[in-house]
Image (cartoon, rainbow, N blue to C red):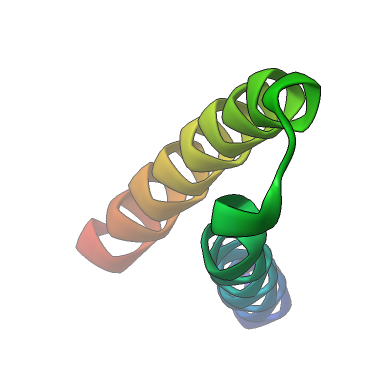
Length: 62
């Protein structure tokens, strides 16, 4: 895997981690409706983070 692709994956992972942290920091202030949407967003971002991490692990093993 090209270094540029690995760098992009690392950047994406950092962005996902930061987004998740922001969501967690604000979650205590959410209304009931926001909690439902927020939970779905956290789940989605977490899945993306897992996928990016798996891609990075595969690239490192190659």
